[in-house]
Image (cartoon, rainbow, N blue to C red; front, side):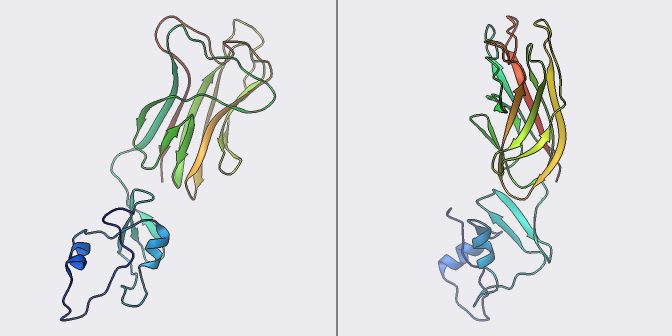
Length: 227
């Protein structure tokens, strides 16, 4: 809990002498709480302010300011687009690696190109997204993989958020690109993986052919928070 976090929103009475700690709390401006549980407990109790429409509150757990609309807490809209873009970059001379059959497996995402979504992180190819509605586009490279598909998997709930278009390649000189696009809504922070499944395994470069031009890009995902 940070230095500005509080556990109550007090009501002061006429003529009451305030302590230095109480004045300091007022000077924080918008009330700050550790999480939504602390926020809920801070209103309506003995000596506490009654929650009403127009109240603001900041949650450390979300790093977001909320307002109360009379029925529920809503996040304050931020200016500009909230977008995140992650990719797999490998050095020139490095292939994408061996593709494996039998189940959906995680694709590598090792580089953040941009991330302005509050609460969104990339850790070991796992994307964490806070509550909201998202529009997503992703693509991944393959070689000679026969039937191929990628998906965006909600690993927190073991559910598929978006299924990609099925592609097919039956030629060692054919490099298919699997893509997905769609939208989804989550009510709380969830973890996601960009996953693939192939019908045919390919050693060394099944997940992308090496080119000695520049950095090799084998997977990419663009995410926009729309609500």
